[in-house]
Length: 538
Image (cartoon, rainbow, N blue to C red; front, side, top):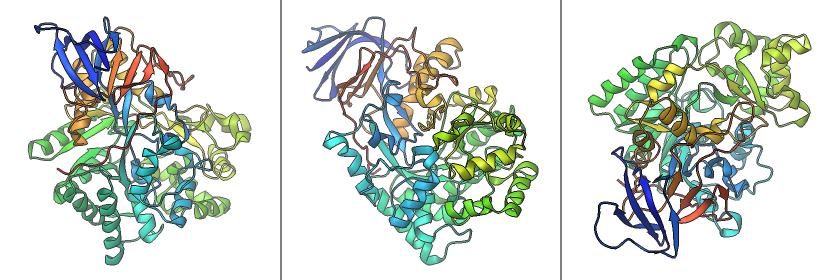
């Protein structure tokens, strides 16, 4: 054998009680599991790891990640590797970098600079989904990438490619083109389709259009992962809309960052869960993911009303430069509640600037828009408008609008999985990017007892692997891939905080991908064992 972990507590990802065993690895797979109650010789190996005091689990699967360029930019990628993440699902919220043409690539790069940077350090040699996945597989001189990655076809990018940024119903020819693009992406290895239905231009799609695209996804055995139309006013209606259209399409549904935010939704998580339970009882195939924090994170430009974003980034900037149009935007945001802000009037004291592209604007980072405005003796919208213009739509924000009781109620649900929604850009990113998985284990399982440790691990491993239809990942089983985490149940904890968000976790000494140590004795190795995980037929 290559490696054996001796006398370790195995938490196998199924949710069943843990047990003690020796776990032997060979040629990238779990070769033998010898429980302490088994008779016969213990497995030997070239390398022996003492598992006393540690737990061994499958590698964690981040069901909602924004590492689309980070995986090509940062070979270490400690933000995820140090957490025990061995697989990320990217292409989220309907906006990513494939499939594209030259025009669309330039537009999407500008639109999501706040998520991934402007990409000036990346060679965008791909145009199709398959070419992008191939690029990931051959990252860093052909060695690979830090962790494994699965990809969702981004519906907003597909719409951008087929009909631009217009707020209108697609023609039959344009719909056929979108169906073709989604099918091609799935054939080339994508695991499903994502949407960002509070982001332009994806939000311009009506239910009939989305249903037709979901029919394509269903045909390939994938799943639909929507950031739906509202997490604030109308949140329950937005959830019901997604449940209804996927049932009509016969498509599996995975609800992205399934939170209940803003004051209008305080204490209303049980209503969401009752909606899901009713659909599940009727035969719907539904899962969801959440992060274990209350604030959200997105871009400042995403708060604008959708009509202000029609036409793309340059059109947005032109509207912001025009005083009369800017005043209309302010009125909708502050008085009526923009659809970009989930139908709720914006509260500038909840909007914290977490990152900017222009270093000259760095003094805004870590402050709310309201606080920055007070320091300058001006109205909050004046500050926000200037930031958007000077940083060319680049600012990222934290939005402090969540409710702890909702977070806990949703994470207990049996179809729940973990997703960081981690944006890695900015001087003060959301700590969930570096802390989601150890926070689940340390805070919510060990300290608060919201989930048992076995159940918590299942939410982070076996259940997401089942959603992704992975036949040999997500469980500690003989023959399964050796994507594994060794952690100390007594000390595992997130190191990241809102004040120091890039601090690495504690209590995770070893992480293996394909049987190779990417984290060893708490330190990142130079191993690049990550590859793309492509859709398998049902």
